[in-house]
Length: 158
Image 1 (tube, rainbow, N blue to C red):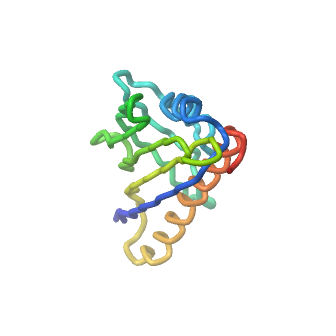
Image 2: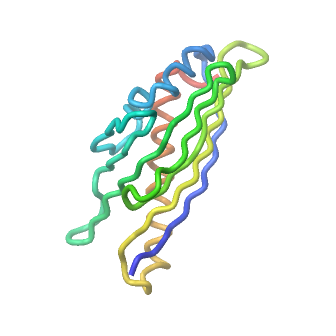
């Protein structure tokens, strides 16, 4: 049996780097992903489509490797990056967006990240109550680390 685990995360933070620099990193998918932990491989499929292959996680014989693809579209005028899932690639569907704006006071940038994802986990249905919180927590820890890595890349928080 397969259990679907959904995750919906949002982050808002301010960094010292100017909006142009922040957008340049976030809109360059390989550069941005280089700050995300536990990525085994990022594959450029062309046309703004990238397949993520994460490091397997689990204990003993119970291992889960998350694989998915998303299409990325950047808008330099609006300083946004939006990604949508590619159907039928891997065991997850991930969408989201970045929005970068200039801070009104003190310089730097305000950054908003929104993420939605669903991971299909092949486990017995009776373990859903245990598996879902573990998968959600793992995903949230990865994204927390990603945001912390980006904040460091952008000179720290304001």
